[in-house]
Image 1 (cartoon, rainbow, N blue to C red):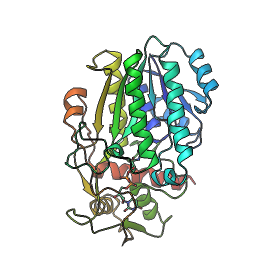
Image 2 (image 1 turned 30 degrees about the vertical axis):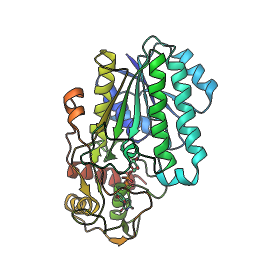
Image 3 (image 1 turned 180 degrees about the horizontal axis):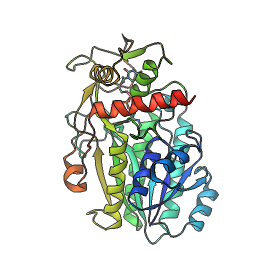
Image 4 (image 1 turned 90 degrees about the vertical axis):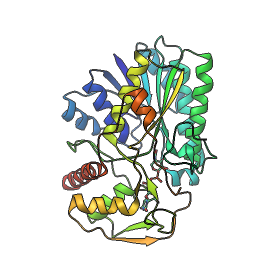
Length: 339
Ligand code: WQD
């Protein structure tokens, strides 16, 4: 069974390629290498013993997308990760985000709808909920006005998929990720550090490695247990496994609707200070940090109600926060020792 993974050499994409290969799928990974590296293929091969077919391609080029699906017209499904994902950057450069996250989705769907097996898994985000009223967040929580162009592209993406499903043979599952962290336990693949990390965990591991002088904690005056913001940090391997389960649901025609939505989280919220304490415990290192002002656009808290994914998908996150942080730390040490 051939499966296309767009953004297949990216952080979540590469971990999903590994889990697909572990389940015996033949994978075609598409990536434009703007935010990843071809060496990720070697890491995948070290883990699974085989490299996916790799097509270096920019999905913003419509003709390339058309040619790709002419060549691979026997694929059974597409898992679509390819997108830009930095919230702050999206505010500075919205057109980059609308082109890269929306046009590419449209071009892929235009080709997918012509295939006999049009199964589509979409990488969405808990960002669509904004600051949800009720915790833990369920899939029927209202989608709020996006707080960034990045978040808006995820909302628009979901709407496009829903409209297209009504008039085509495409069956889709929208996966709303909470906060993906960590790396494969072999440390052969992980989150590639390009530039100053925007996200908490790579900033923590780089600070512990001495690459960053100190971590700035964005605000400790939130209405939470310790004043710092709360998120649901899910191990990237657990997230990857959920994609395989969701794909198999569509392949086995078990989906009850043409578009189904699932939150992917652990169901547990952790504050920034709790993440720091957990990291210090697993690394055995004190972390240098300071409390500064809040970051624009941050929500107070967001963690998932995972009952639907648990009961309908039959999937549950297995890794604890400490497991995830330990894998992130192992990856950081390996990346730095190679350099
Ligand atoms: C987590 C917490 C920060 C950095 C974003 C996207 C989301 C998804 C994950 C793509 C917050 C605090 C962070 C730092 C800090 N990305 N923090 N100091 O903002 O919850 O979610 O990334 O799909 O869509 O919105 O993740 O890791 O940036 O922040 O105190 O140097 O850590 O304020 O409370 P976020 P994050």
